[in-house]
Length: 434
Image 1 (cartoon, helix red, strand yellow):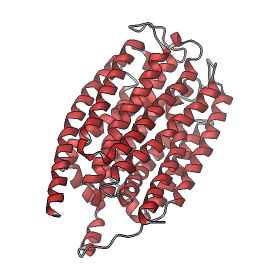
Image 2 (cartoon, one colour):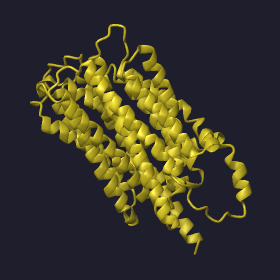
Image 3 (cartoon, rainbow, N blue to C red):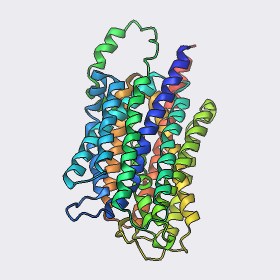
Image 4 (spheres, one colour):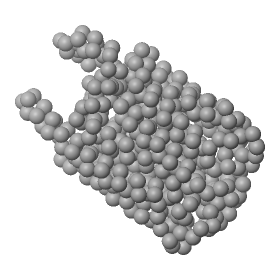
C-alpha cells in the first residue's frame, strides 16, 4: 500500500473507532436526563445536566496535561485507555448510584481530554496541507454515523413508552457498553505512517517537543487561536444544545403525544443525518480551495439561525427544565413533530459546517504542533459546553437560544478574520517556495 493510501486507511479506521465509541456515548448523553428522571430510586439524586457540566469542566482543565500524556504513551494507547473510561461511564447507568455517577463523570472528563488530543494528533500526522480538509470531512462524517445508529436503536426500543422502566434502561446501557468497547479495540488497527525525510533542524524540533504544555499555553495567546477561540466557544455552546438539551425538550413535549420519548431517538437520527451530510459534502468540496472555508461557516450560521427560530416557535419555553411528566405549556405555534425533526437536521448540518472547518484550519495553521493545538481547541470548546450544561438547569428555552444567536454571530465574524490570516500566510508560503 502506498504511503498516502496507508494514511487514508488510518483516517478511516480512526473514524470507525470513534463511530462505535460515540454511538454509545452520544446516545447516552442524548437520553440520560430523560432516563434519570424515570429512575425509580429515592436514594439517587443525580442530574444529567450536572453530570455533563462536570464532564466538560474536567475536560477543559485536563486539556492542559493531555498533550504530555499523548507525547509519553503515544496517541494509540491514549485513545484506547481513554475509551475504557468512556465505557465505564456508560456501564454505570446499568445501575446508577449518585457517588458512582459523579465519579465516573470526573474520570470521563479526564479521558475525553486525552482522547481528543490524540485524535487531533493522528489526524494531523496522517494529513498534508492538501488533504487535511478532506480527512477532516471523512472523519467527521464517520463519527456522526454514531448519532444515526444509536438513536435508531433508542427509537425502536422505546417506541410507545411513556415511562422508561429499569429493564428498558439496563438493556439499552448493556448494549451501549459493548458497542463502546468495540470502538476502543479498533484503535489498535491504526498504523504509524511512513516517516517523512527529517529536516536538518530535526534534533532541535525534538527538543522543543518535550515542552508540549508550555506550547499549549503560548498557542492559546497567539492571534490565530484568539480569533478562533470565539468560534470554538460557540461550538461548545451548541454542542450542549443539540446533544443534550434539545432531546430533553422534545421528550418533554406532551403535545407530541405518547411517542414523545421515542422521538428523542428520531431527533438524534436527524441530527446525525445532518452531521454526516455536512461532513461528507464539505470534505469532498475541500479541493475547491478558491472558495475557502468562509462560505461553509456562513452556511452553518444561516442553518443554525433557521433552526433556532423554528425551535423558538415550536417548543414550549419551559421544556428544558420540565419534570418527567413533561410540559403542558403552549408554544407560539401548534407544535409539529415534522418541524421539530427538521430543526434536528439543521442543528446537525450547521454543527458539521463549523466543526469541519475548524478542524481544517487548526490542522493547517498549527500542523507542526498539532497535539497542543487540538488540546487548546478542546479546552475552549469543553469549558463553554460545561458552562452551557450548568445554565441549562435553570434557563428557559428562549434565553438559551438568545445566547446561541449572539455567540454564533461573533464566532462567524472572528472565524472570517482567522481564515483571511491563514490564506494570507498560505499565499506567502507558496510565493516563497517558487
